[in-house]
Length: 160
Image (cartoon, rainbow, N blue to C red; front, side, top):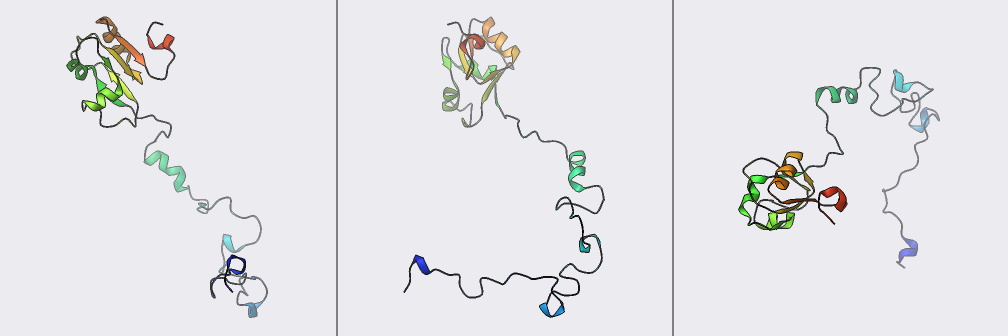
């Protein structure tokens, strides 16, 4: 009779526990599966971690010197220059969605930062996740507004 109440693993899938240090006739005698000599064959304190290299300068400590540093908290922005916004008419509200629809952005997975490169004379309301100081100054100099997504309205430069 089959059912969930009498399931068992197939024959050969399970093995008896290895009983080391129980004499030669156990199959794990003499050295008890530890090999011959060396630090790992001795009794006493176990090694601190799996990557221990016998006192040699550990590879994990070398890598940050040899291979550079990657900041795991870095937020990758998609840069957009002010020159690319010149194509929009005055009094347009420029959002990341609009930038994606006209092909300036490839996707909306990463935040957008506006940089000040290029010619810019349009009076626009630009909404983005970040602005360089020079870009924000240039937008406001021509009468536009720079709105930071996710910030309080008092911080973004927009008036309430």
